[in-house]
Image 1 (spheres, helix red, strand yellow):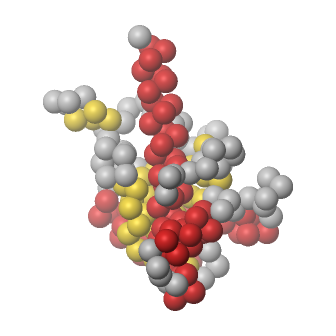
Image 2 (cartoon, one colour):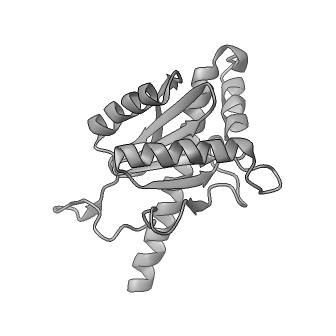
Length: 186
């Protein structure tokens, strides 16, 4: 199906470190008292050298949607633009795509993303969770082709769609972990 993550290693929960990552089922997530539903406000980031694709989710944590693409200029400017989105959307956690090499190792770009993300999380005082983002840009390009759009003319849209895929993978994993936790509690 279009837009669904591939099975296998893609979409795995990859915390930066146990001390800095929020578990998939946070102990005290905000809830809607009437319906006792858990709410989440996460921001998905596809961090590249030139651009950062940004995606958000609905409060129920069901659907990820591309929000914007940030043209990278400086760390401070990047942070300020992300901070505005974090404040507007009351973000609780950053979900960042980590570009593993096809053999599963961390290459140069993955280390650059980790370095940027560590600084960003520290400034914003937010936890970070990583998602294996292998092939998300390719998936986003394929989605554009299916819409009869030229990927070479829509780089910003590719970044937003890739961020949306990253966040959707995390939301889907989180939801399935919450369901299995609820089932095992019964």
